[in-house]
Image 1 (tube, rainbow, N blue to C red):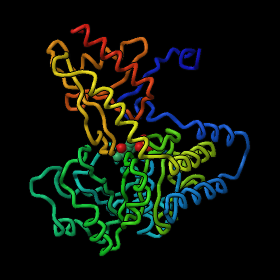
Image 2 (tube, helix red, strand yellow; image 1 turned 90 degrees about the vertical axis):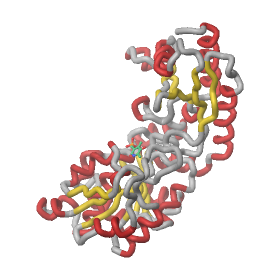
Image 3 (cartoon, rainbow, N blue to C red; image 1 turned 30 degrees about the vertical axis):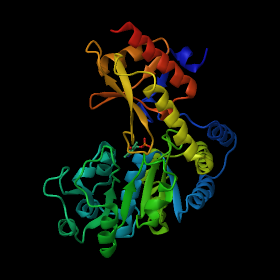
Image 4 (cartoon, protein in one colour; image 1 turned 60 degrees about the vertical axis):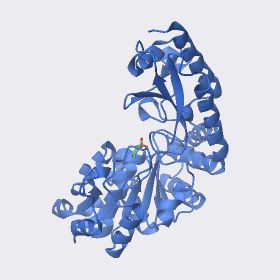
Length: 376
Ligand SMILES: *Cc1c(COP(=O)(O)O)cnc(C)c1O
C-alpha cells in the first residue's frame, strides 16, 4: 500500500505529456534525494539561493539565474523586474500611479493563461498585432506600440506544430527592435526543452531573460522553475524576490526545491538527449507498427509534439465508427490500471515523454484488447 492507496487517490499512467494537471513529469531520483537531504538542516536561504543560482547560471551558460516557484511565477517576476529596471526600484517602492502608467508589451498571438499573473504587478498590458495571418504585424507596427512607458516585452517562441498562432514578429526581429529602444525581451520557454541548447540560445541571442518549468522535461520539482539571463535584469528579480518582503514573498522557494532544482539541472545537462529522442521513436514505432488500415484504428507518427518539442508522438487514426477519440480516452481512464491521455483537436495521442517502456507495452496491450473487441 502506498500513499495514494492510503489516500484513495487513483494512480495514472500519463501518456498525455508533461501536463501539470497530472503532475508534469516524474522527478528524478537524485533530485528527490537532494530534497530530503536539504530538509535535514537549516541554512541561510540567501546563502543557498546564491550558491544554487550561481551554479545553475554557470551550467546553463548564463550570467545569472533565479530558481522560481515555476515558470508562470518566472513570467511574473521577470516582467516585474523589467518594471523595476525602468524605475530603478523594487516593485514595493514604486508608487501605484507610476506602476499604472508603465506598460508591458505582448503580441496578441502570445497571450495565454500563464500571463495572467502580470495583472498582479499593477501595470498596463499592451497588446499588439492579431493572432492570425490577417494584417500581419510589421516592424513599423511594432515600433508604434513602443513608447516612453514601455518596460519590457514578453515573448513566446513559436515552434512548428506548437500551439502559438501566427501574428508575431520573429524573435530575432523583436530583439533587434527592442535593443534599439533599450527594452528588455523576456522569453517564456517553459516547455521548450528539449533541445538543451534552449537553456542558453535565447539569452545568447539577445533575450534579457528566459523562463523554464522545473516540472516538465527537466524532471525537477513540480513547484519550481528557472529564470535565466542577464545580470542587469536578474539583480532586480533578486530584489523583488523572497526572502525579501517584496512581491516574491507570496511564492517562496524553499531550500528543498532549490536543492532539487540544482540536481535536476545538473542531471539534465548530462542527459543523453539524442538517446532519449531515439527511445521515444522506438515507442512510437511500437504503436505505428501494431495496427493497419484493416484494424479499428491505427497510429501514425506525429512530429513535433503539442508544445512544439522535437519529440515524436503516436497519433490515433480511427477507422471504425463505433469508436471515437473521447470514448477511447474514457475507456482507458476507467481501467484498473488507469491510462490518462488527452484529446487534442479531435485526436488522441500516445506521448512517449512521460511513460516507461513497460507502461508503453501495457498501453499497447490495452489498444490491442480494444481493437479485438471492435466496440466500446
Ligand atoms: C507549462 C507552461 C507554463 C507554466 O509552467 P509552471 O512551471 O507550471 O508554472 C508557462 N508558460 C508556458 C508556455 C507553459 O507551457
